[in-house]
Image 1: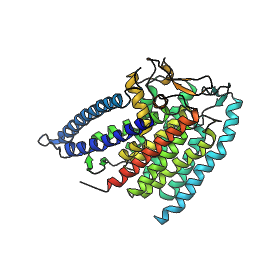
Image 2: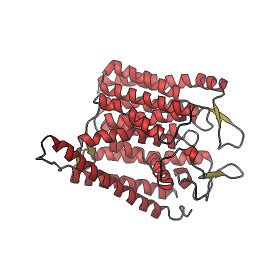
Image 3: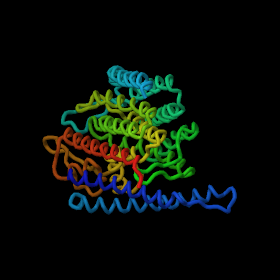
Image 4: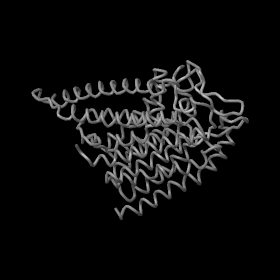
Amino acid sequence: MKSGLFGFLFAMWALMIIGGGILVTLLGPISISGFGQLDLFITSVIKAVIALVLVVIWILILSKLKNWIFKKELKL
Amino acid sequence: MIDLLVPAIISCMVAFVMVFVMTPPLIKILEKRNFAVKDVNKKENIMVVRPGGPAIIAGIIASELVLYAFLQMNEILAILITTSAAFVIGYVDDRKVMGGWFKPVALAIAAIPIIALGAYDSNLAFPLFGTVQIPALYLVLIIFMIPITGNTINSIDVLNGVASGFMVIASFSLSICLVIVQNYEIAIVSLPLGFVSLAFYKYHKIPSKIFPGDSGALTLGAMYGAIAIVGGVEIIAAVALLPAVINSFLFLSSVKRIVEHRQIKGKPVEHTDDFRLKATDDKKAPVTLVRLILARGPMSEKQVGVTIFKLAIFSGILAIITAFMMGVSI
């Protein structure tokens, strides 16, 4: 169990690094223009939606990973 | 760097001594007023007083005011106001049982001083990949961060000494990381959190003489979150906090809603005849970090605490590696 927990911790850390990379690569370059004063607002909304989708995907992957690592222990 | 040494030493001494000296009289006052709860993990009918939050917040306020006298930074004020607000929220919850949504919403409001004082940088820094500019989104992140760190520390406060001991490891790891990323001033500002936790651990460790209560746990968690924001080390702080994050994640993914622990019907952990801790087979009970640690067999309360501290040290090392990775770009 202990090694499973350390493994889960490490996997969470790796997912954070990878997720950060995707976030910087995807969100960084996004910049909307042509809407005047609304440019910043629209850019922020798009970035927020993408970030939320990424977070949901991250949680889903983590849930699957949790079930896989703790398969035996979570037979509840 | 050298000119920061004097305020650093004085504030750390003030933080440690204040909590170390204030906690015994606080224990006596709480005993007189009969503010005590049963320690459910002890065989005998042992009552432990709570909350220890007033001693913790006194140490934080005194030490951060010392630092403010030397450095006069808005960041210190932002940390002080947010942390004090978190203490008040926790104290209200200690005195009167509030609903599941009270703490997250109130802590989100407690984060507003950080925004109002402009004590943040909206560039979110990631290791290896650089920074991303998210001016509007970052404000949302601030609002979410304080409730998350506050409640995360509160949710790990389940065994004698775990919340304070965990905070000692996580906050000193964060201070080391702030030095690595060369944010020396916030590193100094973060040190009192570790010393306050260390002094409180003396009385909170097994067998506990006092519990931090919601006021203590939320104060520690909110200050940690505020330091992460003003120091621009949100990702590193999240890494150092991973065991507690796992606990919250497991809990939320098993109960699938925001709910107070006391509202949960199933018990995740029970006791053996010799009063060691043992995971239950209760399907209604939430999955928690302690339950997973106990999945292979019963352990004493102290053994579970030591396992959580080992996980905290492991995530602290990962946080330090992450801090080094901040200086590398691919």
